Length: 252
Image (tube, rainbow, N blue to C red):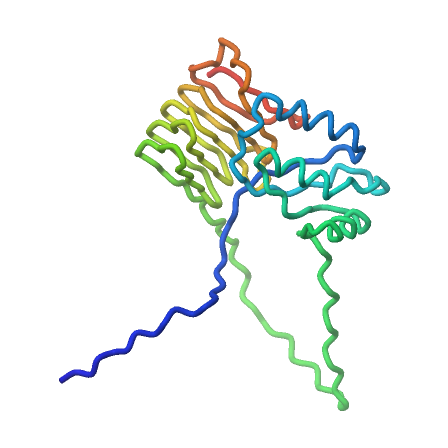
């Protein structure tokens, strides 16, 4: 009789790579009063809009000599409004140090200097120069495009890593489409659409029926707590960033 194979228990811990999409919180001022006023204004109409989204504080626009914000207070303010800040990026050494003290991660910490190669006691002969054929021009990898042909229901999230996403059915309220490139929705866009998720400011969002809850280009987002202009509401439209990093919505 064949021997029975004993099933091995799953390991208690496994490590796998993953890509997490979240909200980039761009800090333009470290002044407590200014931040408090803007947070209250920004979230006044949609206090519970973000359902536990991960968030990263982007510090690249702060001057090098800017004082550190009250990170603990700032994180708590956003947590109470549905965001989960866990890290800072593009922070100066002083900002990074204060963020660590507040329990935040620093995503752009400097890597340790490389260890120099050991020096041998005896001189080694220099290698003969190698001859190589003329290099062939590299063929750029084609960007991937994810195509979705079924409606997205509330709670569903689709992410197109490294390319565009094309949706041929409705993106319903409560659902979310995310792409490192552009987003094309040939149907009603009623949920969230986040293009340029890894910082591509040239990415755009296109739809044949604009009725979105939230749109975002390269981390710059806009909610629609007020009614859209009649020229684009429930009509074909495109969404892009201006040179001043502002969301622009245009009719098609």
